[in-house]
Image (spheres, rainbow, N blue to C red):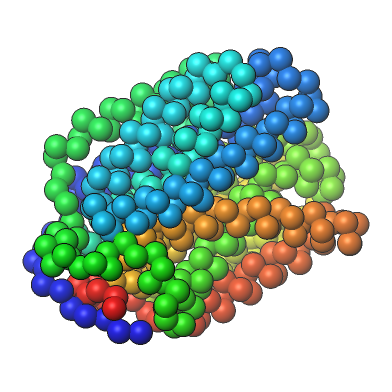
Length: 414
């Protein structure tokens, strides 16, 4: 695997404007990504669906959104390396904002599905473009701080989605998310493009945004797959443990009726704190790998507590959800590691596709969880087994990845 240096002016200070815009864009991104899961039942019931149809069509709509995310991840990533980080950042915000507003007017499941697919496609681009832009414009010694700010502010969008859906009608909740995104577009004039991208663009490299470049070298492909594996435990926690909290609540004999909404809010509340602390930890240790491995150990403890402790009150159970979010909330650290692993000519492609492939991992994780539940006859045992698989794979991946804390991002992949 060969790399070459490129000529680009180094950054000397924190790009405050870029950090703010990327953070607010991710805030709206997460808000929209989780809003449908929170308002699914009242929204589809209002469209006249029965209880069984709400479940069936809800799964269909979530899969439709996921299909948009997967396709958008590849398209926006390539565009980010070919056309620029800024065009993708604001293009994705525009698309998912308009899709959100349109979703508020939806009067049928078919219209809902179209809106969710377009929204998913748009949502796929914002985070990768924002993290790439911020990482390339931030001094090497401060990258961890910058990306942590982006992720911690962004993750809080999940908490905002819960309270918005609790206060407003589901249509109004979509309008609010779309409106916030549109407002962000007015900040476009106050931010400049990444100097590293501009240098590569000026050099007219034909391999910019070449997605297949990831598959032409064995070591590069292994590195890419390890970056994806690193993020899987987070979506195991979200997509399996938190999504099925009502079912786990019954299995664990929780005192009271467990609701997914508060569980999601508590989980992401914990993630907001740990996303910020993860960056600070990696800066203090001067190592991304050591910080990530500490989160793996913490996640193992949190999963164990979640699945082992039974017959407790709702408050304690939601506290466990908060702890699970805190332990699993290394998203900023995960994104920073992925960004720092690859050269400027395919950096946006990697940083955009990796988190969306991790999100897409919910589909095989859900299938495996169902298979394990059927084989063992126990949701708790299935959770233990799948958690062990995810955390082992992720820990091995971070162990094999190279340390990137002191890495200069001023280079290209050949």
